[in-house]
Image (cartoon, rainbow, N blue to C red; front, side, top):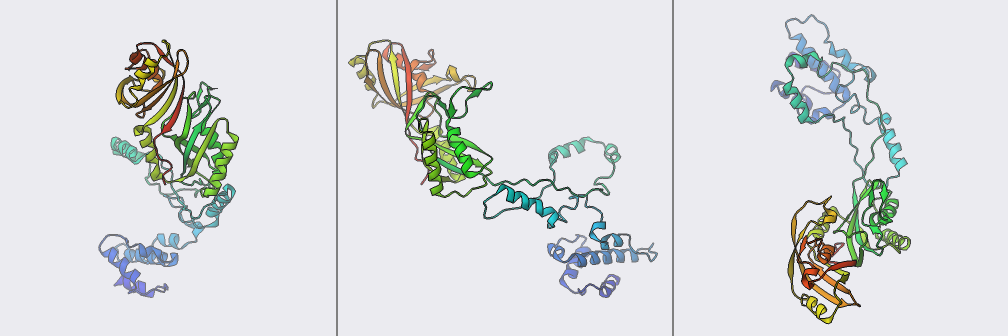
Amino acid sequence: MLRKRYWENDHVRISDETDIWKRIRYSEESNEGVRDHKCYATSEEVLLKLLNRIRLNEDMVSSDYQGEEHPSINILLCKTREKPICIACFDLLYQADTIECLWPIIEGFNSHNFQVKTFNLSVSLPSGHSRQNIIAALEKAPDSDFISIGNCPPLEVKERWKNHPPILEHSAIYVGGNYIKLSRNVSQSPWIINGERLAETSVSECIGEILREKFKCDDYNFVAAGREDSNVRMLGNGRPFYFEIMNPRRPFLSQQELDVAQQEINDTKKDLIQINQLTMITEKDLSIIKEGEETKRKTYSALVWISKIVTPDIIDKLNQYQDKVFTIEQQTPIRVLQRRAQMVRSKIIYSMKAEPLENHFLTLQLRTEAGTYIKEFIHGDLGRTKPNLGDLLDCYADIMALDVLEVDLEWPPK
C-alpha cells in the first residue's frame, strides 16, 4: 500500500490502475522483472519517475531507512549528458537516432551513390573472441584469478562511443550467360605464377571488368560449368557461366542495359571472346551450373597425329565407336597432379567419329561424360589412361589442337 500511495502522489499523468502500473506491479510480485516490452515503449520521463518511486519505496520499508532519498534518484533524473555511460553499448544505442550518429551514415550513403529501394541499418558491437572460446577460457581460470582482474562488467566507463565511417554493403547479385572463347591464348581465370602472367588475359577479366563498371561493384566472382585449358577454344553456343557481383552500387540493371553491356564486351573483345544471353539470375539458379560441371555431356573436336599413315581402314576402325559406348580408366593426369589428388576415374565415351586429313593427320569428334581428360585419352599420358587412342590403333598418337563444341546444359534458365 505504501508503494501505491507514493504512486498516487506522483506528478506523472498515469494512475495506479493503468496498464503499465499493473504490468510492472505483477512482474515485481512474481519476481520476474519487467518482461513486458510494452512497458519500455512509454516516455523516458515516465520510466525514470517510475523507477525512482519503486526504489524509494523499497528503501522506506527497509529497517535502516533514515528518510534520505535513494542515491539513484539524482542519477536517473539528471540531464542526459550527466548520466553514467552505458557499460554495454557506450551510449550508442541510446543516441542511435541522433544527427551525430546518423549524419555520417547519410553522408557515406550519398558519397557511394547507392541506387537502392530499401535498406537495413545494423549496429553491432565488436565480436572479439567467440563465445565458445570465452567460455573455455573462463572454465580454466580459477575464481581468484577472475576476481583479481577487477569488476566485470566494469562499474563505469569514461568515454562514450566514437563514430567511425559506416560500412555500406549491398547483398550480392548474380548475372549469367554463355561465353565463346576464340583465342588459344586466353585462360578461363587469371593465370599468374610467381608474378608472371602466363596467358594474355582471361575470360573472367574480359567480361568481369566491364560488368564491374556497369554495376559499380567492389569485386566479382566468376564461375563456369567446367573449364577448358587456355590453348583450347570454346565454340558452339558457348560455356554457361555466372558472375557473383559483390556490393553493387547499381544492382538493378534492366535487360536493355545488360544487352548494351553484352554488345560492349563483344565489340571490345571480338578477337578473344564473345558472350550471349547475358541476363540477371537468382541465387537458386546457381546449382544448375554445378550440376552441369559434374554431370552433363560435352562434345569435342580434336586435331590428331598418329604414327601410322591414315588409311580408310583406320578411319573405319575408329568409326565403329560412332554409336558404341565404351569406358576408359584415367589416373589423375601428370599435368594436374600438383593441384589434383591422385586417383583413378572411370569415364564414359558415348560416341567417336573420325575424318581423314592427309598423311598422319585426322580429326576426331568425341561426345563424352563430363570430366573426361580428352588430351590424355588421345596421347595416353604415359599409359595412365587405358584404353587410349594409341591402344585402339596400335600406334603412337598425339593431339595438335582441341576445341570444345558443346556443353549439354540449358542456360540461363528460362
